Image (cartoon, rainbow, N blue to C red):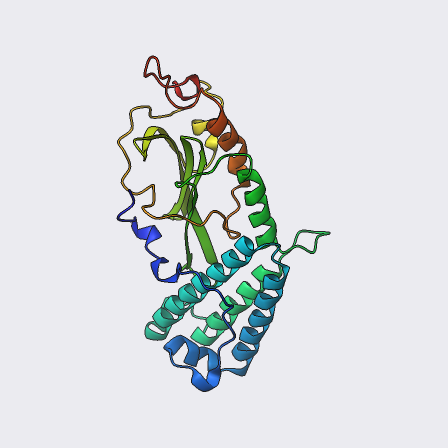
Length: 287
């Protein structure tokens, strides 16, 4: 079970707690942290923070159900934690920024980007993109039984390239009866790396029967067992994949729709997993 996490996933442990009420704009009369004091030192940044607060409360009002509202609240707490980490670092080391940007400008750009994220919609729609993705996830998961191992473990942080971009990556698990199909996505050395896992619940614990990795096209982990598939059907049991506590079932900062075709096959077709009579991998996992 997940007792330790890779470095890329340690970034958000402090910001994962759920909250029942929305976080308000910074009260500059009570600013206590270095990040809050930085934001409050500039009128334009204070105005940006007020705009973010309005956008946040507006998206909360559009949440169609309690699960999505709770997700939005947790997501914002996660962002605030990442914002403070980034600004605290820049306050101590302003040389981390490009030469043409001040720490105050970085704070304002970061806050403005978050407000824009809450306001983002698809053309012709009034539904915020974060809510659309969460609803899509709920609808997809409704096809399956779910289970204690299903859920999203998401890591988000302000990327240090210019301290303006806030990005999220996740390990996401889907369960149907005793089959668990997982996608583990991470960022390293300027590229996205993805692993897929197929596991069966044995004795109340996930047992991985196959894994596959890729960093651009998923042809190497194809969903139809073709000759290009490179599944490892004798994998070591990974130490950092399955959480020891229940995970959130949805996350509107993660677009997992590209996984859905593969996941549906993985969760419903006997060709994934092992043949119980022979112990051999199913045909979709054969090389």
